[in-house]
Length: 309
Ligand code: DON
Image 1 (cartoon, protein in one colour):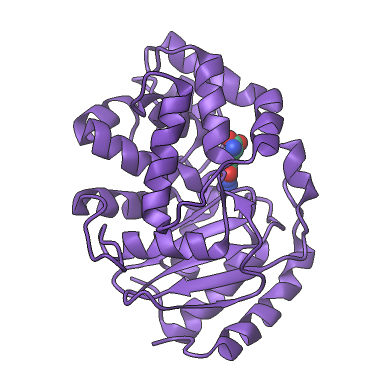
Image 2: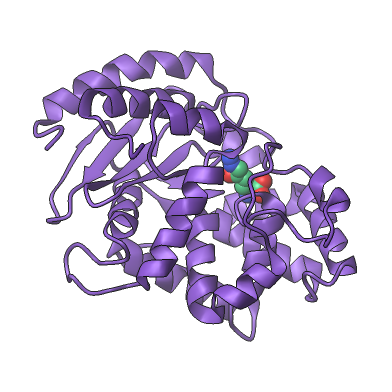
């Protein structure tokens, strides 16, 4: 079992931390620019409920795009596979996460996958509830279930900051409304989506979510099933093909595990049947992935043969 001691993990973290200098924190959502670019922390969660960590485990980041895999799981549970994939496709795009280009040239005009912004907005549109508050509460309850923690909330500051500035996401929504992919009020959908993206977690929460996916939907503590096996499998497949955006191919070669990143610098990893990994490292590379976080995963993958391939 890897990393039995924290010292071992701390040494790897120290080495990877040098790479934070090569990245920049996201600033297109103004509130995210306040993050400390030098931060890096990691937690690894085992199937028996034990975990190890290095760095500041208390440091919270917002989920951002990591939330997309969680709303996908919830939408699949609530609506079923057939309905979800009538509105969103299965294919990687090779384009940046917020790109609009494929929406117009695809026929039918539905987002190519649930991990790009257009696809994630279409999935959030499917979350059940009579109001934004009720739908957000459904998302928060699901994340509380996955993390085993009641202490899951969203940052009003980050949500507001994204809501005020996400004109590109607004345009994706209006395009999809025109083409019948969504049919709700765009401001309400953006209100829900920006709050979902602003849900705060630390790297241990991410590792705890990762182990549930790694165990095919089973909670490591209660041993109860918290999502159907096919939902966990489907989410892990999207994590492999599109989880690291247009760096997913290189990540699959160098690391080889299902993972999902967010522009806050978080990475959620699931090593099938072995462990969940959570990383927080706000300095990003040019594709929007945590630069030191990806390095750290490369080191771990090489040292402990993590690759599934
Ligand atoms: O929609 C957005 O732009 C953000 N709330 C999430 C983007 C994101 O995290 C992409 N990640 N690499």
